[in-house]
Amino acid sequence: MAIFTARFGLAAVLTVFFTVLVSAGANAFELKRYKERLFAYPGLLKPDGDDRYLIVDYRESRDIDARDQIPERRVWGRYVSLKVKRSQQELSFDGPLGPLRYFAVGRLAGARVVTLYLHGRGGNGKQGVNDFSFGGNFNRLKNLMVRNGGLYLSPDVPAFDASGAKAIGALIAHYRSLSPAAKLIVACGSLGAQICYRLAGDKAMSEDIAGFILLGAPPVEAVFSSPALARNTPFLLAHGSYDKVYPIEAVEAHFREFTRRKADYPVRFIRFETGTHGTPIRMIDWRSALNWILSL
Image (cartoon, one colour):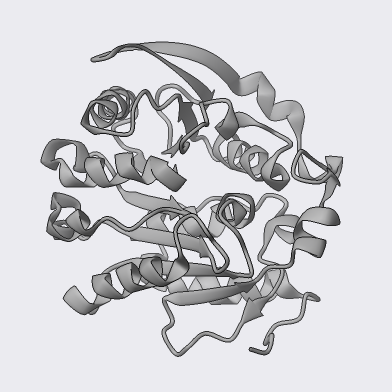
């Protein structure tokens, strides 16, 4: 596949691309730019004719080795701003499984938008607020929320089953009550998607969620009979083409099933060519992903 956009001027090209995607919601709240040139996708490969399917040119030598001062551990300083840590708190929520530890960044009440990140197996809430890992991408997400009057939440996931979903659902309901006008978006990494799909399948909990972002996540067939699907809740799926944990073929088929069942369903697929299991968390352009959901 040939690259149809050069790195030079890529931010401008992507601006046009995503303007087209969100044109239907031109009057919606939109996150302002922050470090756009550093975090915009480094190159786009020609799509297969489906304008909801985006292929990103990912290269480890450029997107890890050149981006990180210590590969996969510490990004170069220009990618982060630590001022945002002034708005970061470590808190505890008294949920149905007992105290739930989580990190909150931004406005605890009256937020314009709320973004929640759920880690996968072996992780914890600290992953989602690590400023230097994953190429500084979580630092950018925190800055986007603070600079746009939003709130970012990164909790410990107590279990990847119904009890864990109940605990996370209680946290969501709490912050929806504090920011009733905000759209709340849930992003799930890897096995954390089990919580996303359980939230989507619960009628009461899914009503509080404006959209889901699934990063390197396994497909779950039950979503197609979920209340979230019946409500046309947006789903964005991002996956590495070399993912050995959850092979991309099954995830792409999952994406196609959304559109097979309903041709105009609000779903997007971002394929990181040559990317592995953790690539979507490192490379997802949070601003464009969130703005697409906010526009709907």
